Length: 110
Image (cartoon, rainbow, N blue to C red; front, side, top):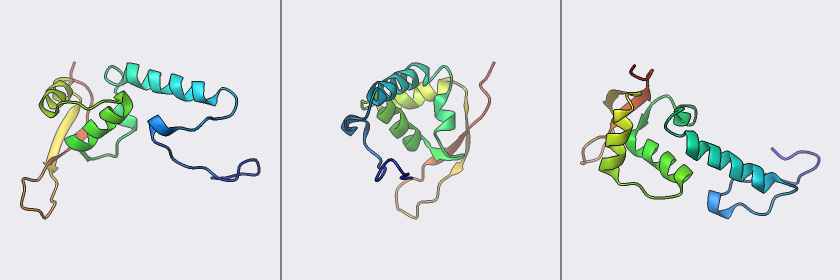
């Protein structure tokens, strides 16, 4: 929300963030670096996804944070091996193609 100091606020793609005041660009870079470092081991995505999501939606989040495309089969294998997802249902899309499964985060396997 805009306030008394700023005229507006906008969303930007990570590769299109404009010059920000003071050290705010460095703060954004440090936050992104921290997200990349902790994406798997601290399950950062848990706080960035809705309660239920498709594997494709999770992959899009990872690709955005990492700044690169990921191979779907390798991504799914890696994510499922973490033991932190629970497959719950198929998402009805109404289309002719196979409906994707919905997932939610569960506690990691010990």
